[in-house]
Image 1 (cartoon, rainbow, N blue to C red):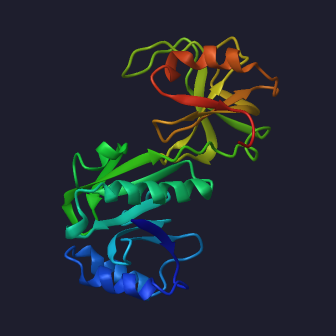
Image 2 (tube, helix red, strand yellow; image 1 turned 90 degrees about the vertical axis):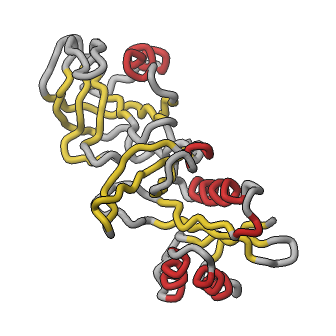
Length: 266
């Protein structure tokens, strides 16, 4: 089995569109329509699985957007389909991995997927992060999943920036749900949206008292593998702090996640 990333310039593009239009899944016709209307642009791809004798066995896509409006997630793996004769051989998993690896090659740390299936994509390592009403039927729920691609973020445009923000969980306060104590000031950057749609979270280190606002320089980024939120590490004057000390100071919260401290372009 071979999985091939396709653009509209590929000679097999129309054959894949025909296959999608004729497949047993109703959404296949939508994919065929998108392929024929030139809806795939730039880095977006259709991934097609071919048997050794050239028979089409399935497909999926990687695109900037999916069916849910007003969300900040990107990119999406979508339109995952395996033909009936080829099911039971983990081809869906192979399609997902191929699309995820391609996303990693583009610099994406995470990929997203929208589905109404429960228990399907979790077995491939996808984690639920959100759910929204289906645009075509508000009484139905679509779940947003994510998966880490294995790529670390490029922090070269983040480290060294001077930013300002507010502290909504000052030193000495407790988490409103989990109840743990904040030994450092924790807040958000004004006007900088994060992947979850809220403003970018940040740890303010090098300050030994509770504060309400801050201005400082970003010295590091803590990248979470099992969450969609990265945390920026800030000191008031840009004073550097050794990795071990940063990790010690943020361990009170990051102990619940698996991640890595990033200092430079990986």
